[in-house]
Image (cartoon, rainbow, N blue to C red; front, side, top):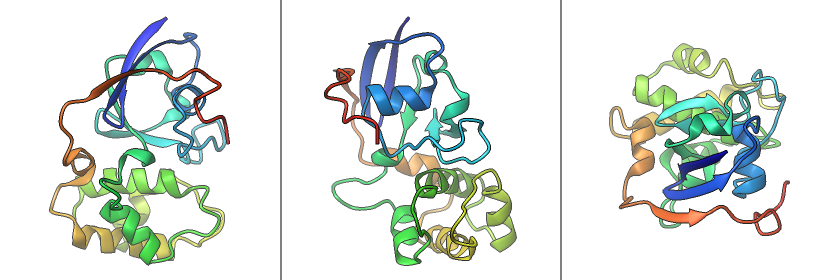
Amino acid sequence: MRITVTVDGTRYTDEVEPRTLLVHHLRERLGKVGTVVGCDTSNCGACTVHLDGQSVKACSVLAVQADGSEVTTIEGLARDGELHPVQRAFQDNHALQCGFCTPGMIMQSLDLLSDNPDPDDEAVREGLEGNLCRCTGYQNIVRAVREAAQHMRPGAGPKAEQRGESTAATATAPSPSTAGGVE
């Protein structure tokens, strides 16, 4: 089936098997390996991306369901070499250990901050409850989200991902041999 999807500001048109999960399309076909495959059951949240501005677990969405949509991955957040405020806050607050859950945590944090630009600790924990971390104990993650909230304008959330974008470029999906492989 032929789909067209805009990922991190670039439009891709590609043939996909109808049962291909969005997470596998992003990683294996488009080379967006920052979106990680965790549990494959939508329990861990490691594969969280934004689909039309809302966080989704990419292992629970078929690629064909994203046809005509805009997807933002962790790779699409930094602009002109500058980390997004949430990425910077995670780095500054040591809100990661192994880093496996970090892309999904950051993407879900953006969604949380879009809905609640000034969350308290409890609201952050509740907003991230669908994203699991096996290493950190969450305290530094909570601290990072609250710090990011202080550096973002109210309600920025996923809309902040689009700052500085002009029109989307168009590309054909890279062949599997040039897609960056699966990490």
